[in-house]
Image (cartoon, rainbow, N blue to C red):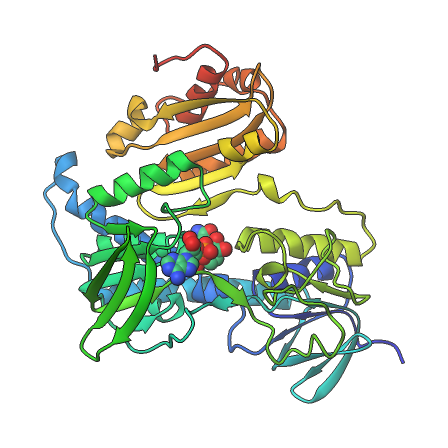
Length: 460
Ligand code: NAI
């Protein structure tokens, strides 16, 4: 009997829906299985979109608080229910958009929980559905520390997005993207914030200068950060939460309204029947895939956060979904180059990077040259009243740009130019010859490359 579908996708997050959309575009009969009431997965429902909507409200609050710097008399307070309503409005609009698109492309949505069967096939709420190819895109969920459970006061980002109040004080555990963004959000909304990070610096995966700069900026914003902290205990005492930790060899305790645990995300594979169907898992439970995103079982693929690939990011999931759909359709698609994918964190100040850090480039055997362009030398950044820098790492002697690392105003948008520079292996002299608009923040990228090409403009 012919398979009911060419492609069955499990999970309607960014990885799953992008696979489905592209496969349908390529003429495949596609079904998307989702157990949530709404399509969109982590990014739309519990991640990128709702957090960035909240951070937009936080940015407005910051602007109001600083309005006098621009000669405007303004004051105000956050109205949490209105902030949450804005968050919901944005999420609803985008969910509606993607749901409509899936319908327009003729993709069948099967509501239910899927289990993988040999064949490959799926069992969806007891019903067998056959397909030529199955794509696992079940995503990830926040991890908790061992022995810690979610309570009213001990929460993860999932609970934080729908919380009933702005905490007066918060302990945030983990200074990766989630921890930095929530610490920044809570501070902008007026909370006292303590940020605990196990590794020696904040944003520990970023270039060391960026890591140092965000620590400085957070200190100026009044966020108390303890890198090198080892959390010993989190106790919800009903009217507060007590967090005990050790830092610099000293035992410390902090009491706050809430504790947000942001120590990373683990794969969602429970009940999926992967092991029974013979699909190999990585030791941390992610689905093992090769460079083409194939699992060890023929015609079973994995994309997005659940796959054992280097970055858990929505734009990575889109790219992986497109690649798998095209491979299923018989196209030759090269392995994804994960090094040159932009990484973005929407705290204040924003952080963005692409390519290798100076340390990584040296470890890889490169002789490295760097340029450091301070945003304070850029007119537009002065109007916005923000500092920070652009750091460019290249091969010594005029060789290609290997990495760009930024902290400061709107760098999560500016990184798109840096992405082109590293992916096209441009050399500093080529970028220096391109004309950036004045006055604009993008001049920081242009001037950093002018400096690296040996002809700095507004810097010494
Ligand atoms: P993460 O892995 O990026 O950061 C977690 C941090 O917690 C690490 O710095 C780690 O050293 C620290 N940590 C772990 N155990 C700890 C402990 N016991 N005590 C103190 N610190 C501890 O994970 P995060 O921030 O939860 O994000 C999950 C994923 O979602 C990441 O891949 C992230 O890149 C992605 N994401 C991306 C965003 C963006 O692109 N803007 C926004 C939010 C998340």
